[in-house]
Length: 114
DNA sequence: CTCCTGACCCCTG
DNA sequence: TCAGGGGCCAGGA
Image (cartoon, rainbow, N blue to C red; front, side, top):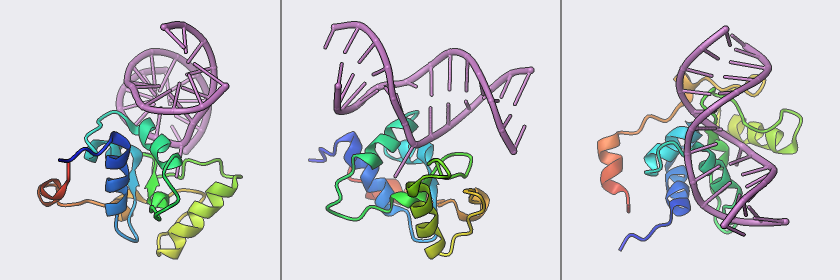
């Protein structure tokens, strides 16, 4: 049966975010069936196994901004990865109205293994 | 078991 | 826009 752990469900959702799109931590949590657990999403990304590539850079905060300190190496890496996908990033900000992933919920939920 | 720490979020001023 | 403050809760110490 579908015994995906909460963390695995988060990774599953993040893997669904298409190239050139982004999704806020809070919405990742909602889609993973963990409403109100935005913080847990950040933890899950940090603890994600390097084994398989996870598009963690497509996850940003609800303000449309990269959540790493602007002077950190992680910040620069995420900004670079987003730009490589054609996303415009200004001072760490991304336009959610323009790039936020808006999946067809009915279709999405049907395909979820949890 | 308790305490502390977050790649967060929402609301207020 | 920006800063606080309260809420949230799984892990590590």
